Image 1 (cartoon, rainbow, N blue to C red):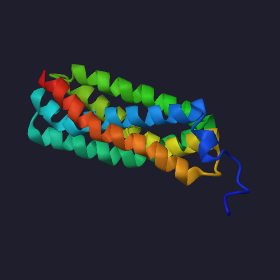
Image 2 (spheres, one colour):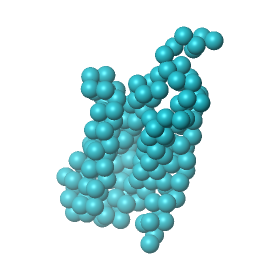
Image 3 (cartoon, rainbow, N blue to C red):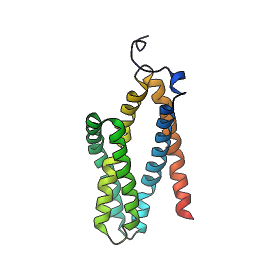
Length: 169
């Protein structure tokens, strides 16, 4: 009852919109890509010729920078909209993944990769709910967030296994 006065769509209405399914696609792709990369990053860094301590530092720095990136990208979303901020975050995150190809023998590229991935890797945690509210409203926010979160969970579960198999080929 308390949410009846809030603006937005009911669950049934939402699942019939393109916006809902795009949010689900974003969620599954995000979970797949971020978990798939993050779970294997230490081994990749070691395989690229760096010491185990460097790989550990990469993991820790990524997590530490996420604490900075979430509020920064959330603030950016407040100024330019969640869709635009999320787009910027995803472009930078994709660039950080591409940079991984060049890190053997180039420590400065590894530093740039960590900076980009760390600050943008958790951005959808702040911007996803904001985008959901902008596109579907607040009326059934919790129910819809749970449904979208299911797709994130699928991506988080499948990503590390799939990326591991790709690396083993």
